Length: 289
Length: 287
Image 1 (tube, rainbow over the protein chains, first blue to last red):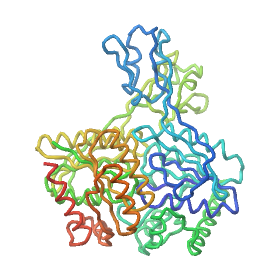
Image 2 (image 1 turned 180 degrees about the horizontal axis):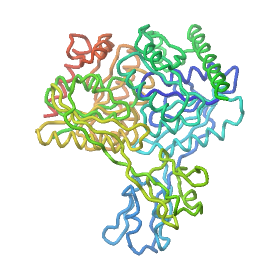
Image 3 (image 1 turned 135 degrees about the vertical axis):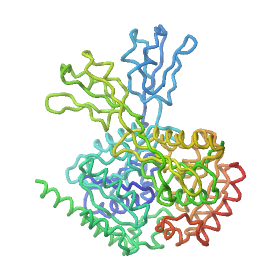
Image 4 (image 1 turned 120 degrees about the vertical axis):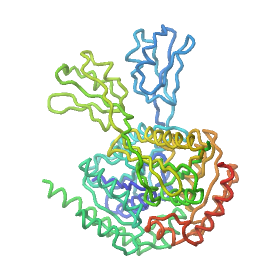
């Protein structure tokens, strides 16, 4: 079972939900937490896993060798302006290169070699029964796509058992990074908060899920008991899977970088929410068949 | 013309609350919402759309099935796993295609071409406090970084024409969208919150603004939620040689003002007072 935790708006509580669900499932079923928010990964702050392995995410970029005739085909074909023929040489701008290899395809004399540069890293670790995987984009780098693709690959490599629960903590927003982090999930958990901003961005996330034909439900964080999110869910016939109350104590535990499940009342809340989600996925599978 | 961007690293720290307050206090800046994936500033800035246009920033490859000989070369060269099958024919998944043209050049029968694709819609609106550039990314579209550049171009053109400065509300993260938001800015304000996540993300985003050599200052929002972590953040900022220009207290009036669609500075509240003080400090640099 794969679950994607999304939000549209940042800071609604994606990581809180993903981490605490993972910790609360771990004693009963093999659980893997994957942090796909490679620009600002925060899950490990709360999970504090033991480091077991780190790998570098490499992106290829071209190096032009002496066979080059300065014909300019490579710079013409490059869609990212990463190559330019200037003053008798080909200039390469690795930071603009997407590593697509087009320059190598068009070069008539085989003058394009490939070098590799580090774009980020992937850590695979373990904590209290939760297998933890995170991707980190290097500061100053623009392309998160290759790190997310590498994470997907590592997620598959490290999760073979059928009864495994995988929880993917996705980036905020509604871009291709979100789509690539969420795809292949059995259910998306849209985490929202009862503010005008929260509702507005929840609507964007809902439209995105419908476009991708991905099953989803809503989790309301910082619930103030008000009708804003509840009424929207009823109107749109969306399952409200659960709520986490607005509580300054939760905010304080969170601010210290601690998980909530050490407090009995919140442990209970996440246990119930977790069971509800597992049941929901099972029921949807039966209905789907 | 000067440009200042408000970013945060971590999401939900209060960028838009700060941006709306400054827009209202400045009364004479061109405002740009560069959080094109989850824009919120338009919800608290009453505005009328004056002009809108489609921005076409992407290209996607498509296969002409009449010319395709099923040789599979396109799938071989694509590094984005965008070539799949639909029935008997290879098919390019537009959500994965990055428009790199590798398949276009590799195809022996010239069956593949790049086609322009709409990225989103860009708007120029008027508000009580000046013009406002914003955008809407099309659903599941690629290229939010380019759309941000387009919003900034629109804001910059207006700012030049009207001899004003630009105030940018950014997005969370540190990747292409944020880089596109801050390049060429004279100043970046990072809004953070007193949590370990806020601190971690702040440190990363400061490395990014440092990488691009943009003068950076920090605002700690809801600082009194955890005074200890606020102090840790101040210490970290001192080490990174970045000034904490102000601290905003936790204030229940903030969500109430948002719910009414107003900037917080219209009310007499602790957060509004703090924001006015910060604005007094930074506004001279922007004229």
